[in-house]
Length: 266
Image (tube, rainbow, N blue to C red):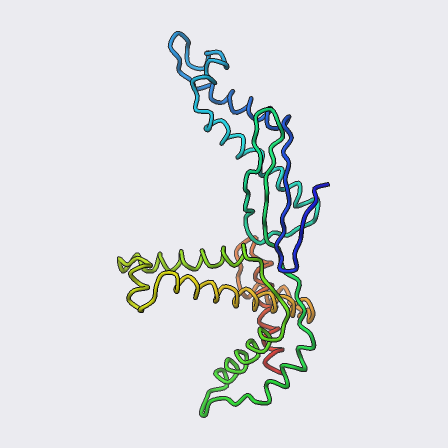
């Protein structure tokens, strides 16, 4: 059994060993695929000796093929072995890839963190005693203001840390969305940062801070769904008209909406 290290913030790391026998078998398969299309003087296409084809083939091409075919099964085996539910693709760093030996990879991935909400109803209700909605605010606006106050209280009091790799992934995705939006204006992120009198590093740090807050809040709401177990009917799911295979996500959206209603009623 592969030994894993799991932190409260959801960071999971382990050393993944790929047997040399598996590597050798996949290498032979990769070489056989190259032989099929190899064109070497004196031989018909696909008929040259494997050793000759190997000598004239970029070795990195063969190793890349091997990596692509052995990493996923080895990773999946560890994930299923420990019943993990990864939230992002794994970060894989080769530790040892010597010829004729097992390959060893350092793998890091993120799962949901450990969350301690404490007596959230008590501290939320205490905090809401100071809540005063804006004058002339509409009911929906009052609800939104109240929920934002509750979110701040939960983020302040709940004990939860988020895996750095997950924060980095969320930050990267947010910056990619920003870059795509800016491209239509023919602006780079650097140009945009200058236009709001900030450095690129300042902008990245702001996005990272936002990522931490958004992820913490999302996990807190997931925990509340787990605690409150709001019921969702098939009719409610059908009303959202989810695409095939998206029914579970539609159910989650409805559960989160109901949890927000529960919080707003505190």
